[in-house]
Length: 550
Image 1 (cartoon, helix red, strand yellow):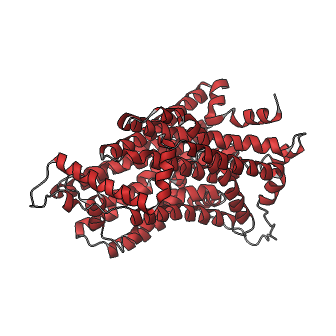
Image 2 (cartoon, helix red, strand yellow):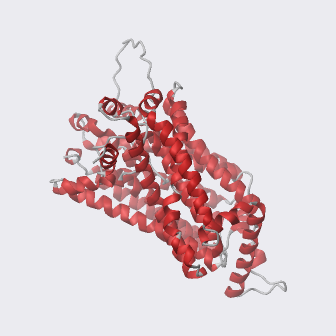
Image 3 (spheres, one colour):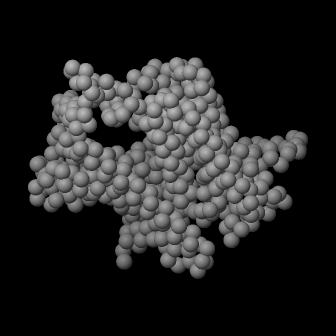
């Protein structure tokens, strides 16, 4: 077995905790790992169902030919985004740099193995995106044999270029973070800028190339007659086809790009493969030969300060625990950036609605065959975004090897858990207050709708923090090498994000209800979510921390 294969096996041996599940002798640990695998499987099924459903919608509106154009680009974008945020931990990690540098191995096999791991993750993402979408495309469009012949090469080629670019951008991001004084703040700002920049670009491109579909124009005929469901679908399909034609006219490469994967011009996959392999080879040559030196230069250097002991202060238990939580939280830029994205998006949405009327905006973009009430559903949308990832969903796991300190404190479990819960709410509170101030001054709604705009996001914020701590107590991950494992790959975080989809369901229900019932249903939903939150909190209070972590 050569050096590359050995290192790659070491990188992949415990992917998603599978090796722990295979060899652990602890029944509770085996049960926990099995539950994690079930959670991952459910999330994968949901992702595949969503992708297939979106592709089926395109086929339903007779623009299935857009699938080979959109989904390969989506697969590359997702591979790049995941690779960008994980390249620092996977490729340039400093934790084992000294150990690897001391071994009788060159840096090239080490870099090759780590890039290969990123490539394998990209292939997994590409399979999840392309296979369900292309199956829907094949059923509806009946492509020729070339489509099936070149499907596997397309899956293997698409992740190469995004992985190479993510490695280079990771160097830039790591260098910027290493050379500023406030490293955590820099990492958070870079992550927020990337996310907001991606959202802004998607809005610009969609706004510049798509056709506005006004429901009032679709639901009625020229003589004012209400259209049937079939006639309405035909008109929506016509408008969607016009939008696709405009996209192809404004960006001719999109049509050529789609022809590469539809089987019409499969030679394009060869061109993409040649370019991707060339960029990947250059990346491997430059980074591979200098991995250890690059990693050393990218390692943040902390300057020691001249600390002076002045006076000792006594604080209450709650204040001391909150300060401890704040120190742990703000010590990790990855932790902060991942938990702050949702609240930042909420504030961005609130600012955007100062310039757009939600009723008009929804009416121009929706394709729903019923009367919708976006103003009634909007508080649930805001609340659901707050549920993207709560700090509490990793507050137990982030303790890691320091968990014994928590267990040895002469403090009850309830006080420690209450502090973690309270700190999670304190992180969200400034964004909630800022967004509410903006919305209450900009949205033109009645008094009762303003009350719902205050209460629904508030209840959702409390529910998100409580649910996050609950699932982290059920699925703690105290043994980890990098913070990426607990912030991006742990079962607790997956389940916390899953609450986002559950939180959207009440909003969908209110959106479709007749206007006279929306207030009553909203009030009932607030009571239900509050009751579920209280039930979760009682479970948290009864948890004994001495039983966590063995």
